[in-house]
Image (cartoon, rainbow over all chains, first blue to last red; front, side, top):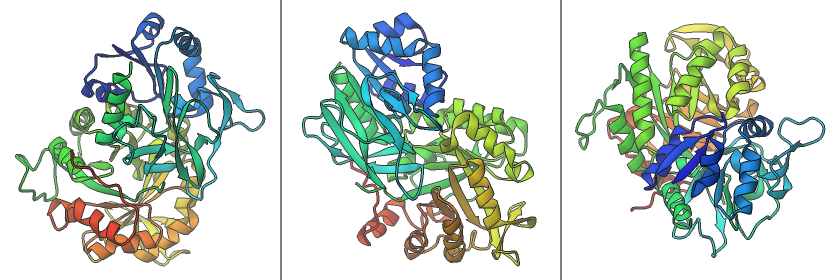
Length: 200
Length: 257
């Protein structure tokens, strides 16, 4: 069973349907026990870094993610759900950066690009050992974001470019994340979801 | 690693049915928006836009159901516009499965609505739809209402700049002079709006020949919206993408699976 963490961040229906279409039992939940025990946990997210962290903390989400990883239970962050896994984010912060969950050390900062948000379909430069991108290395995925991580973390990195190079996806043991929205990336996105579920 | 240009078919929907002429031979029911959305997805649309032109509350409720059913089957971004007047209206559409909403008249009446929606859901959900035409204003372009029949009394470039400052995430620029003519997008208008905005720009109105699509991109559009040329099968989405790809514009290839 796949749990999609409901922490008040945007529309979860697309994620729910996409994971169900990929052939899984899916539950959208903010229940701590269900989120902890699920075979796979998805942390989606739409909105600003600080607002999402606040929502995540409201359901004890940071602790759930840390405990899952300590217990070797797979977790997947999507979009802001990837960004808040880093230690810091500068979105809407005039002074010190906001604190994230801190699975990875690094700062999520604004892309240096003439047109923002980075909105639309982009390709990724994928490590050949990737689990998520197996068989779909050359496909395009749907991005909507203005901020991103720009330094390598984890074991496998996929990179994309908009104004500058940024992390499009990471695989790091039991923690995986995509900056793009697989649930909005058509057949390629569904294939990526199947790859992740197949690895659980 | 290059961002593809987006090809976006637009469907006018009222009371749960697609209106304006739609002429597709391979549809069982040419009036069903969910079926059309699925077909355009298969053909390689990069996003879909529904414009709700329902006049009644019941019609708008039906649109929520259309959005819901579409989002369950079609896994590409969906923008819904028409009749959105409040943060609550946006919330209902996003919960039904829309990824973005486009606002127009209500933002003209009360620009602060832009900031309210952006603060609550983020700029990335908010498309400002601008119905503009050539006129004797400061920039030479003015905003219109009522499908281009009335002047809103607002300069189009000034409005775009104000809306960007308030937090819109994208501009949908509809040329009311070019709309429905199939004589080409209004290139001068696209160039002018591009110069004053740093958010993605969707060109709309006037698409006819394949060259029209590339001309709009050359003028600075990031995405291309069209309705009748797709609905009537003048061009398939694949034709447009093949043409653009051949001329070295970045397009998303749609793999056959």
